[in-house]
Image (tube, rainbow, N blue to C red; front, side, top):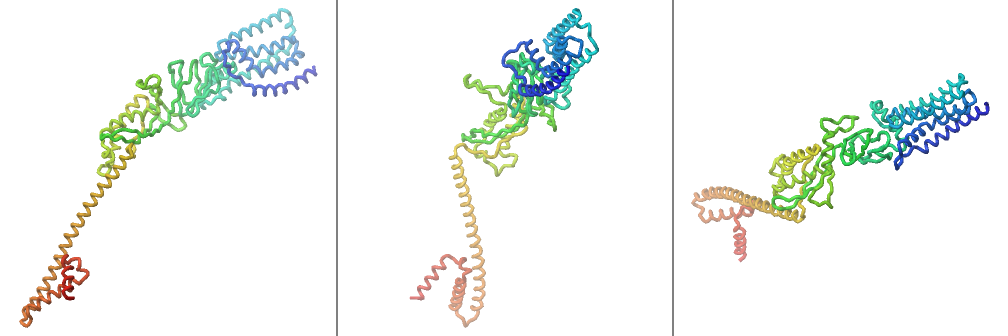
Length: 497
């Protein structure tokens, strides 16, 4: 007896250590092949009760410390935990667990009745009750902890743990069957399978974990069932993740090529800010992005449209993120065709709200908003940029030459006006100066003419000398007639002769 007790004391911690390492290194893996319902039960029961198998070691001690036969002790140590696990799985809505638990219970009952009938159990003593407690307490406590802690292994909201406790326990139990439903994670807008499984025949619920800005469409074959997320979602039968929608505001910009009224091809920058219609919900701090399920469904369908004119071999769906700019392209080409190239570049004589690009944006934006709202997309911003450029660079070169010629002509005309005004003012000043000079000389000549001793020749000579003195003044030289210079040269030549 003492030897068995020592063996039990030494073997129990060693077995616990190696069992823990085994469980860590060999987690349950989802089978890629179909697993029958009965086999799933035994897989789950065996893995859940695996830590309780250590109780069989203590059976060596109990077999010699109670009046019950050793075979009955080991039967209770092995059968009762399986019976309790079967009932626990049945309570988790595993359909066949009730049948399996009933079979186990019936076997245990038959064995006990056989023991009573044979007289082996007639000599039971007080040690039977501690044995039953030793069997029942660890099993019940383990199942309770598994039920309570299963939800802590899944990233659900703080206030949602109690609501998802049963589903979390079902998920863990389904994983133990080796044939669960799939568990999927959405990272950066793409779905990644974390635990492989069968969405149609797998045991328990599936799991879908999304980012706070993503919603996922689930389908059952060829039809879309519903949209779920953001957050953690337990999926049901035939729920297959199909597509992911980014609920955040999207920004797209492109350059659209179109033709003006005068047939010149130009490129215009066009931008758009949009998102899946959030419906009546508003974005709040520490809350996932809101969205309307109807809008998400319309957006998903719009992103699956193809152009039937391209032919079946070239069918290619347009991503929903490209739809606003595609719609804007159609309307933009209609509006730009009403303007010439010069009108598009007109900026000087227009009010800021009357600039062509603002007018074009005003005509295009309501159309795009209405069309996108029909497809579940709300446009919150967008416009036509200012950098409008012809496709052919020669058009730009020609416009520069025309601009240079225009301003050269304007400069020439303005310079001619300035020169003409200068000559007019020069003549006016010259006339005034000469008028004053002549008036002064006439006044002096009249004084000289009144004197009888001075002849008229002397007066004429005096006038000529005065005029020559005036002509020698450098400041008055520009005001003299053009012929003055030549008269002066002629007089010098006559004096030399």
